[in-house]
Length: 153
Image (cartoon, rainbow, N blue to C red; front, side, top):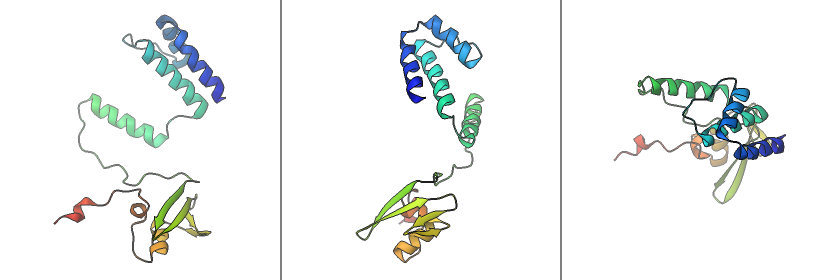
C-alpha cells in the first residue's frame, strides 16, 4: 500500500500545473486556491493520499490546530491554556534511562507502565522504585524540562 502511494507521489512531478489543479479537484472535492503553484498543489495532493493510506492527525491535534489557525486568522492570538507539559505516550513505547550505571527500560502499556516485569500506574512510581526517592516521573525520564522557576537564586 505504501509503495503504491509513494509511486503515485513520484508521478506528481511529471504533471503540469493544469493537470495538478484538475487532480486536486478530483482528490479533494474542491477547487484549489488560484495562487497555488505546482509545488504546493503536489504537496496538498500527496498529503491527501498519505492521509488516506496511513490515517490523518489525531482528533485532539487537529482540534488544537483548528483553534490556533482560527485565532491567528482573526488576529486574536492571545495567551491560551498551556499545552500539556508531558507528551502523550503510545502503548508499546519503551523509555530508557540510565541511573547509577544501570540502564532501565520501561514499557508504556494501556494501563500504565511496566518495569522489571512489574506494572506501575504512573511514571512517578517507576522513578521512585528505581531511585528510592521522590522523583517526578516524566522529568526523571526526560519527558519534561526541569522547572526553571524553582532555580531562582
